Image (tube, rainbow, N blue to C red):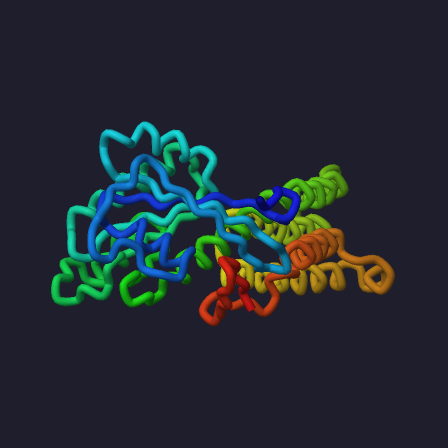
Length: 309
C-alpha cells in the first residue's frame, strides 16, 4: 500500500462523457499500457478508479483518475465526485455527433460546481477514420467556444493516449501552484500600495503630479496582468506573463531614473521592486518546470510509474 506522505502533491481528474465514447479504454491504455475491452463494451457502474504515480516538476505526484459512467441513471453518483476534482477530460466519440453536443453539457455541469477548473476536450476513436462524423475543425471550434483545449486520441493504436493526462496534469499543477502563491503576491502588492497611498500632489499639472500619473498607469497595467495570472494553465501563458512583467520593470525603472536622477543609484523604484518580488516568487515556485515545453514532453513508463523528462 502506498502512503499519502510518499507524494508531494495529490490531484484528482475525472473522465466525463456519454457511454461507450472511449473513456474507459483511454484510462486503461494510459494506466495499464494496454487496450481495454477492444472486442466488446461494458458500462462503467458509477465511477471506476485508477491511481497513477507520476514524477514531474521535481515532485512525486499521485494522480487519482476517475472514469465516470455516462448513464443518465447514474449521474447523481457522478455529480457527487465533481466538487473534489482538480481537472477533467471531457470525452466524445468522433463517429457520433450527439456525443460532441453532449460534451457541452458536461462542461457546463462541471463549471457550475467549480468555475475555474482545468478541462480538455478529447475526441476518442481517431483510428475509425472511415466512420468519422466530426472533423478536427468542427471539434476545435466547439472547444474554442467553451474556452478549453482539444486533443484527439486512439486507444486502439495507442496514439496520443498519454498526452491528455500529461497536459491536464500540467494545467492542474500550474493552477494549484498559483493558488498557493497568490496570498504572497497580494501581500507584496498591498505593501506597495500602502507606501504610495498617501502620495498626494497639490498641483495637478506639476511635474510631480504628471510623474505620479505615469506610475498610476503602470500600476494599473500590473493590476490587470495580476488578475489574469491566476487563469494561466500553460507554460506558454506563464512565459508571456513573465515577459510582460519584465517590460513593466524596464518602464518603471526608466520613470524612476527620470524623476530621481540621484536617488536611483541607491534606491530602487517601489513599483519595480514589487514587480521583481513577483517574478522572484514565481520563479521559485515554478523552478521544477524549467525546460518543460509542453509540445516536447517525453514519457518513460515503467511499472505503472510515469516520469516526465
